[in-house]
Every structure is written in C-alpha cells, then in structure tokens.
Length: 338
Picture 1 (cartoon, rainbow, N blue to C red):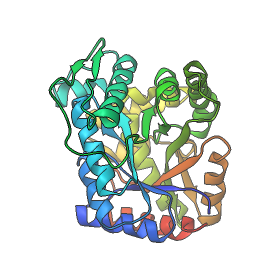
Picture 2: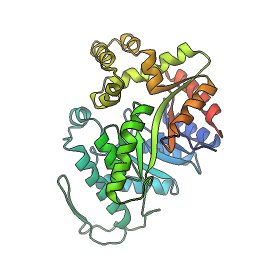
Picture 3: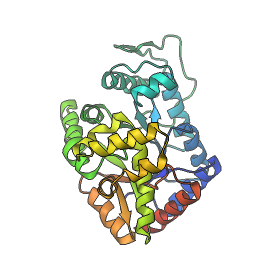
C-alpha cells in the first residue's frame, strides 16, 4: 500500500478518536492532529486509545508557546501512551498570533526553533539518566541540575517533524529535524521549486545523507462527483489561509497577489461569501486536490514524485462539520488500502 496520512478534524474529541480508528482500519500510515481550536496533544492522546498500529503525529504543536521541557515531557508521555507511535510535529506559529494571543515574543524563528529541538532531544534522551544537561543559547539558558526523571522513556529518540512554508525554515527542517511538514498552501510547484531544494540544502549542511529527512505535506482533498460543490468547499479552506501573511510566498509564486488582497479585505469586513468568491478556480486547482475519485488519486500520486507522505485533509473552514465528515468518508474509502 502507498503511504498516506490523514488530518484529524472533527466536532468532538470522541469523533476525533473514532476517525483515527477508521483511518487505521482503512490502512492509513498516519493521522495528524492540528492545533488552533484544540491542543494537538490531547487529540493524539484520545486517538492513541482507539488505535494500535497507526502512527500519530501533531501537525502541528506550537513550540514557542510552551517550554522545551514541557514539550519533551509531553512527547514522552504520548510516546508511552501510544507504545512508540508518536511523531512530534512542531511549528513556530505566526508572529501575530504568538504575540497577540499568547503574549509570547516571537524572536528569530529559525534560530529559536533549532534551539528548542536540541533541548527537547536532550531531555528525551537523557532525563532518566541523571546526567546534567546544559544549554546556553540566544533564547534559552537551560540546566537540568537537580532533575532526574524516575523512569525511562518508551523511546530515547522520538521523531521530530518541523513545519515550514518559507525556504529558511524548510532548510532548518533538513538541518535538524527527522521530517518536514508542508502546509496546505504548499502547492506542488512551491514544494518542488522552493521547499524540497531547501530541505536538501539543510540536509547537506548537516552532513547527513541526501533524502534522510521524511518529506510530508498536507493537501486539501475534496472528492466528489459534484465538482461545483467540491470546488466551493476547497475554496473556503484556501480563503481562510489566504488571510495569513505568513503564507504569502506560495500565493506570490503563483501570481495570486491581487486575489489574496481582495480576500483579506473581505475578511476584515467579515464577508465570508466574498472571501470564497475571490478564490478563483485556478487557485483551487493549485492549492487543493478536487475532482472525482480517479482524478484525485492521480493528483495525489503526482505529489509522490517530490514528497514521501501526502497527508490528506478534508476541506474544513467555513463549512459545517457534516459536510467535513462527508469528505472525510470518501477520502477513507478512496485512499484506504490503495
């Protein structure tokens, strides 16, 4: 079976756990929990109890709003709960949301994320040994003097995936992470021309072998015989992300600056219909996989030319959860054991 992942998105925690179980039964490689309206960690804990073999990842946990030690302890707990199936997917979050919503200074994200990952790995690998771990960096000054975790972790090395849109952060994922996580707005062209070369450059600078980082990317997938409805659902998700300036590079690469300006204007006016209407068919085809089952399978398979793991996400913004569930059901049916 070809590897494919699924984004967990549901109205309740119980539905998230159920969806993870269904994905496992369908033969999916992994399920991934997002973080905006819920914490990604609690969703993974729920999914761990209803599954046995599927990999469980965060896509993503916002790293700057937690201490590295808290992240490490949480990762070890989830890895134990899942019997070694946990993937720690980290993201820096947007500067505006970190500072406005969390009251946390953003700083220089590439430098800071590298420090975070190094500290997290240090805690995971050595907190049970009693050996002193010290780190002195630009953002963190850490010493574990007096700390000794009383029990061993399930694994002393937990895979870390780093989310990136910009080239510098993608290069950082190649330099320090075990995996790269692409965002919904990372189109095929953007992945091929910007992301993948940056990841490989980071790998080269780290001294590791080419291709040693698992490349995954989230893809909005709307499978339906009703193409018009599927297009509108995909456009709604794209409209949401077009409002975030952090995600400008892919839109700019494709020449969609005029459309994104209109979408942002409609967003500030709270006019959701206008936001969606300003997402052109070309934008939807660029940033999402839309069509009947055969068309969507072919489009997802094309991504495999450049990434290792497509992670499929049903459209989910500005549509109700019953519609989300209907798209998830078809994803499971079409891509299960394919």
